[in-house]
Image 1 (cartoon, rainbow, N blue to C red):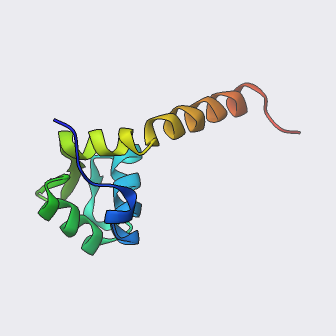
Image 2 (cartoon, rainbow, N blue to C red):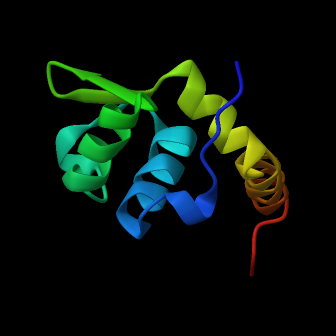
Length: 89
């Protein structure tokens, strides 16, 4: 099932929270960039929460990948690995 949402259909708070949940999820309530963004994602069926923890649903993960966050995550992980291999003086 593919998501019909586009970045233009998400508020800034929703985009930041989607990014956070994709890269760091599950995420504790206190570490979310926006609880309102989270609540809006939950209402759209893109995220879920329980007992203080928040995560993307499969539709939320598909949306994040469709928005290119998977490529950005790969690039960030590759950069972190390079940085670990070559310590700066």
